[in-house]
Image (tube, rainbow, N blue to C red; front, side, top):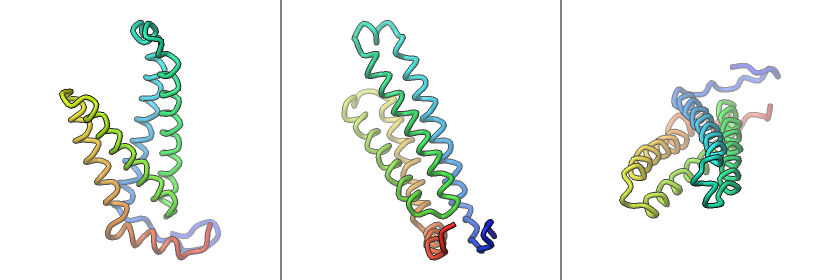
Length: 147
């Protein structure tokens, strides 16, 4: 694939494209969750507990995290190693938060489902970014001059 500078850049393998799509989806879901959290501040229980401010801040942080995730997804298609590291860190944080959720409420079935699905999702994304053809794609892209 030739870029605007006339440099032949390697095409991302299918595994990287799948990770990019999953990363976009994760970013969009973070943004939606952030919006829903901000709207939760108007709930009577949240207001009665005095948690409206913290819920709003958490929602804003989720929206920002989603926007950063989407930005890193576009870096993955360009073979940016920094994007690969950032997405790995994001997926690891997601996995740790799922584990903390289970530790806090071990009898809640939704926590276990979240850990199972989120943990599997995170593990697959990390594995897909660092193994096989994906790793080779990022190695070759790093050797090329910056665009």
